[in-house]
Image (spheres, rainbow, N blue to C red):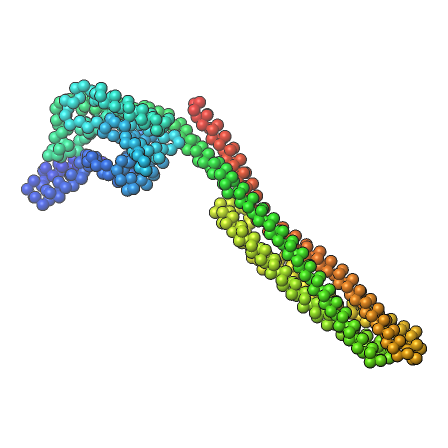
Amino acid sequence: MDQQERFRRLYSNYQNNYQNDERKKQAILNELHSLQDGTIMGDGRSDFTLETRSYTLKYNNKTFTLLDVPGIEGDEKKVIQQISNATQKAHAIFYVTKKPTPPQKGEEGKEGTIEKIQKQLGSQTEVWTIFNKPINNPRAFKDGLIDGSEKESLKILNKEMKNILGEHYMGYKAVSAQMAFYGLSSALLPESDFYKNKQKFLDFFKEKELLLYKCHFKPLGEFISEVLLENSRNKIIESNCNKALKVVEELQEAIKTTINRQIDPTIREIKNHHQEVCDNLDRSKEKYISNLTNSIFTEIERFKSDFREKMHVRIDDDIENNELKTMFKHELQKGIEKLRENIKQRSNECKESFIEEIKKDIEQFEERIKDSLITLDRINIDSGFDFSFNIDSGINKIGLFASIGGLALLLAAPVLGEFALFGGLVLGAIGIVKSVWGFFDSDYKKSQQRKEMNKNLDKACEKITEDVRNQIESYKKGASEMIENLKASLNDFVVCCERMREGLIKAGEDLWHLDNRIKTTLKQRIAQ
């Protein structure tokens, strides 16, 4: 049962059964007021309608949906979301006005009605002005619905709307909706103003059909069904294609902007900082090798000086060659053991200093590119790269400790044994060849012992120095490889940016192909 039929039955029941019961009579009257035609009509206030209502209508066997949207001239904050949601669905927008003059333009810092309309338009939305002329006296129709002055005003309105809305604006249609209501309404209470006005107009025009024609309701209905709804399926497809094209174009522009304003500057910035950290790492490596070399050779020189001084003291005590040979061997082993411990300590100090330098270099790099990483994270394109970088785990993973930890083992046990045996054999020869001369002259013997001891110490230290130098070269190579691996790992940030750039370019190419397919579909529809 529709609303009008319910009204008729309730009104009949009211007339026949409730005239003598005031309480029930008033309750029925209240319900009849809510059911009668015209309850949705506005009262002239711009904020009368606050929510969008949908009406499915049928005219000349064509069905369409009309969305009654809140007025855009009122308090926009209250209704902007309702308006926006409705206009996104619409393929045609009616700007309904009771004045034949152009809508208000915006002033500095404030939007006018026409600018508000422009903001709500989609790429294929048609805009029509509906001049809804208010008429209270049927005699006003003697010169037609609109007079010459109103026609001139409507021409100016058309021009102003076209200037701002461009190809979206299609023109105007005139109607007197209230007169159409009087011609169409049937569920009205006899005591209502609507009913009285309806009778006044019907008494003048005699026929509903004539009233509907005079108020331009029928021409408006024919315009909607024959012009707006003609080939509506293709129009909807065209509209959707144009909306899709607009989205594609916006995405293409967004990709271009993202690459030019974010990705490319970020790549340049990270590359510059990467080169800077690479230079710093190279300097840290060179500093480490220099410090390590200087520290180790300083220890060797200290060992050599201390050992020579100690042996000279014992030689001055006028010891025999055999005793000197034994002492040389013993003290050399002891001295090399002490040298090994000292080198181990100095190596650890250099190693720790080197690690701290590397950490500082990487921390500085991370600080410099922090803003760039935030930018990349906001872009949020999956490049398969984790932007977090743990310094300690990163260094361990690359193998820093493994590369330089072996420096503590520069003087291993077999090397010490080789030095001790070498020294013993040489001093043994001294004892056999020089013992006769030493028997007669103690000073000569001491001189020869110092000479041979110094010569053998120099040879031992030369051998130590040569082996240590070779070891340092070996570990220099290891440290260089470690630094290169670290530099390559830090370059992953650059690689990530370039992957993102490639991904965006690929997305842009895909959008270009999609754009072509949509345009092809659109051309085919237009040709039909």
